[in-house]
Length: 579
Image (cartoon, rainbow, N blue to C red; front, side, top):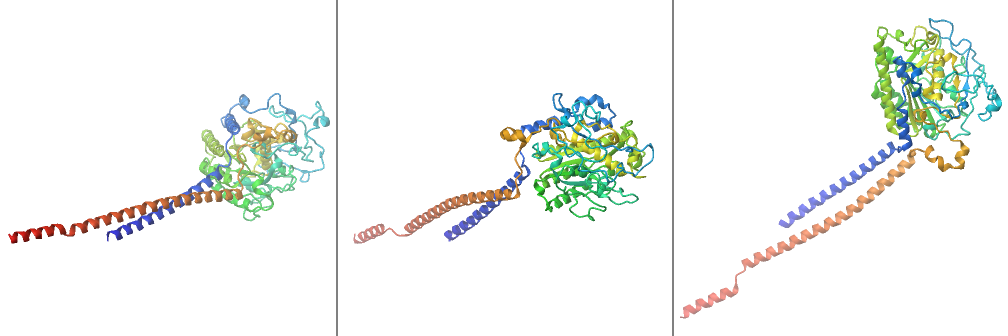
């Protein structure tokens, strides 16, 4: 009976060992999955160069902050990143696009007339084809170059975009190493353009006399440049590319009415809390692109947010939603330049602090200047929090350029609005495209007080022929291909900062190896533990059996009579009787 109880206990113990073994397998499997996921989300290791550059870019004064606080910008020039005196300043080529009627001669009222007059004058590819960045000295001469923008921050060579007959910025990708990281993205590297946000990105009201989305004319994603000579960011970038840019918008309609290949996901009356949903849909559409390798193609995403939110609710941004939006884009896009634009600030050069949008919004009409200042600061601080979030990614192929106050300056700023509306008209969109383009090319040194009708479109220069993003504000390195070919090891660290993001096939392969190794280790350990446990169990059973046998022997011995004693007693009795 005792032996049966021991066997039952042994079976229970073995079942418990089996459960422990299964739990061990599950634990190792979960740890393997966590390890793989962790390696996917941290695919780029920080380098000393990136960290130091992050510290450098945090030190610059924010021009939007100075504007809101009505500071004298000239006093803060020393805080704005500038080129050194010994650097080659004369390589910045300027594209001059001017019309005789950019700002019509009226200080009041509205206009839906475009800045662009000649609808067929935009792109004449035959003009100035011979412009070469190396022989400009020979073409114009050092002392005979036309004068360009008088800005102290930007030097110019020539007006190569003359009389609206051409757009002929010299291309640099053939001569420079570009597109290896966010520090050296050239306009020629952009292959995909997308837009998120509110009315400004949808092109709401741009078709005269209608309240529909004219996405083909939106400054951020429009591709219908043949209509009234519209200038948009995609139309400018297309001039640098030998292939069609993916994602450009054409025609009129909502995002659901137009083909999914058009990547403008903006919607009318969007607030910052709606952006995560738009970001998810954008990532989903990008995964469906078949025309190009979207994973290895640089994507520019322009986000316009805040104008509708400020006008309708007089509130700051939903910072958590903005962070979530950037997180979604970070996970879903391998190579991305994100440009996040805040509320539109339309003003005149003589009163920079006054935003003409204020009196057009029902919410802000009665608000005082202190309230509007606090509201603007809320957007500035919210955008800076989002920028800090991007710092934490430490990715070499993902960056954010945040511009919390989208300032558009004009001598006659009323001419930039659709009549009786808070939306920009075609002229306003042209100015928006010009301001953003020049900001991308020149960086923080671009003068926000510049009257856009008198300013020009800039070409990348040879000092830094890349989009100016936080990673190259303080230090821009342009590497010529011939220099790289002579000594590639010298530039390898500069070009490849951080680990490259793994392809899906590599991730699956690595996951399989980790799981296989983990399973093998668990199996070996399980066999060892099982055999050891079995030996111990057998020894215990054997000891119990021997103990039981000894106990039984002792019991039998105690029950058996002593024969010798009995005989002796019998003899003793007999002897007594005989006597």
